[in-house]
Image 1 (tube, helix red, strand yellow):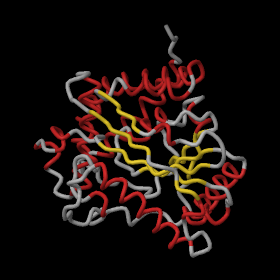
Image 2 (image 1 turned 30 degrees about the vertical axis):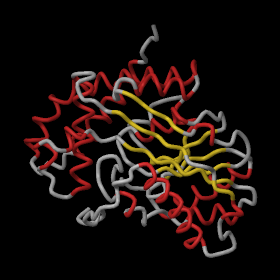
Image 3 (image 1 turned 135 degrees about the horizontal axis):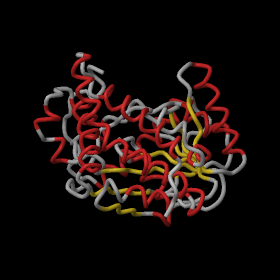
Image 4 (image 1 turned 90 degrees about the horizontal axis):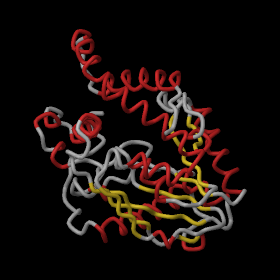
Length: 306
């Protein structure tokens, strides 16, 4: 039995309530006040789990601790292609950002001890002790975002592995939403910078699918959001609440497919970073299309009406 750290539970709980209320985008302060006590109990449970997860990272290491945490939110996790992960040398891991627990599924899938994940500063994560040791935080201003490029370059020069969600924003879940592979165009050109600067770098494309529950996504609660992206965000939040209140009631079978590593020599590494990034996107598109063969379908612009 792991003894909870009550001060950390309290901080995570407060941050989780604030974020959940904000994500519902309710304009009425009265509705927000009504929502807070409804969310309080399941989010207190989440805060206790987050505290234990953090302690398990120190005791059991990141992949095993993450698998323990994930089991509270998903039905199954299928990882294909783990043998494709280079076990040494600089490695840049580039998955699509399907949302939900995709961040956690990657931490459960990558077994290298030098593994780092680029993440946004987050009030829920801030109180934790051990999880932040595996993260490289992005700030909100231009200087902070420039600094993260240098931090990643430093990690790669040391031969470490770094995961970045190149879009930086939620992308369509390819298992659920047709046409997901046509919405990778917002990937950051910083990928090209890393390729140009690190001579022996390998790029590892990864496709994540199944992070959004079809039953919740197609429910009236999510359909009130007409914009596809906002609908997916709402569905993700609702399924979290369901899993916390009624564990196992919402089936969620997540698939992680790890492709063959892309060698630097296979890319136009002397070209402009944008051209290099576009070629990496083409690799990702082909991998996604090979898994979700019916995914090439028209989808209204995902990035409209943010």
